[in-house]
Length: 230
Image 1: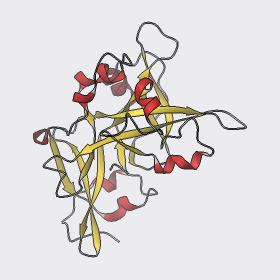
Image 2: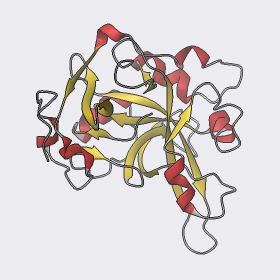
Image 3: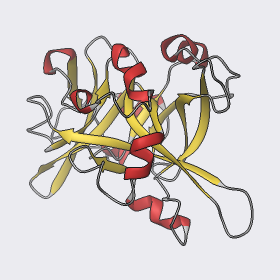
């Protein structure tokens, strides 16, 4: 699964990488993004026939349109790529509301005796990237609608497998356009695969990452696996 990640790139870099045509939200670097928080996604701009893309803030944890209350989103932060097209919570969004979830790293925990050792996972060249995501709009009985997203996961590659059996689906820049294209005649199954292991890196970090309150560059620091911070 993917339960924490980071977004530290400047918004202008997001504009270039994701070809954003609209306005950009004001964003600060985020080193420890947690479920339920507002996160940036790139998606096709609504109401535009030119295929423009917008960068918008949504809640992490997809709330299906039929949900009775928004708390269900905390159980929907990830969607399995193998079943996303059939699951009632995700299938409508998979058909028509795909998005790119902006990121530059994520975290997983490996069991080590009675403790869990956290790891930072990123691209080997530390460049930003996109998770394959879905977004949804839920209308509250009273008040404004809530937009939310989920991150697709697939089986782990050789780098991640000793740490966790799942990993988020990372898209190459070449995969951005086909993933966002809602044309049902265009298959996206080939995009939902483990990312090449030779292009990724992982290293152990301290347990400060365990608390979402610790949202600073210090959580990225490498540690020896046995030297967990309290």
